[in-house]
Image (cartoon, rainbow, N blue to C red; front, top):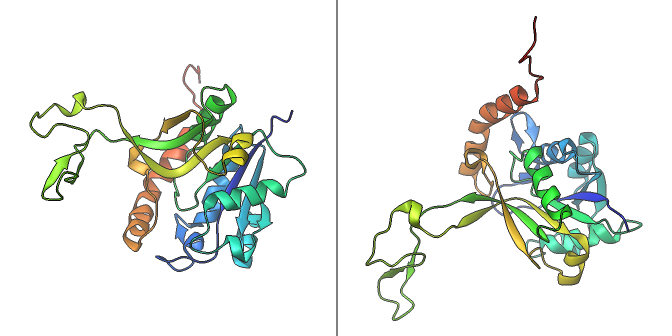
Length: 242
């Protein structure tokens, strides 16, 4: 049985909120190129693929070092699911991989160390699916389910005000990446199946770009994030006699 880990980046040419979103620049790089670079930096990923219907995105993906899967127009509409692109990409391979890693190009600050940690958890059968998340110790509210009048607490009793640290554990998806058993994905045709676990990532950089404001925020954060990544990648001189 194969042990290959394949990263797949769905990146269609169309975009409802931001025109040509996947080619927008953050920190001097296109979003699709940043996603490819993050995937290639992960030790546990053996192959990086970009699924797209767009020639310009395909050229950018190849330049960044990814293989390109030509996505049919029917799978590149605004209503087509990401899972359909994943399954199409898997079907293009000679044999299915053991693990699929889906990266979203709209999350420009994916850390390869988080990818490797999530891959290790799936490979060790700790979970069938591991997704990027941030802890959200907040009080959630919703419109009242009883009569629709007013609002009610979701994760707390409004009549009892607990400390934030006493709230039940909860996380929010960042949308950055999902690591899955390929066999389970093919059987379920959905990214969530079996045992699902979160991989907590740095909330300072958990930006998912859907709006122009979020794009501005990502561009503002790029210098901080990319500078921190460069420093982390430099060899340490601790213990040196020089």
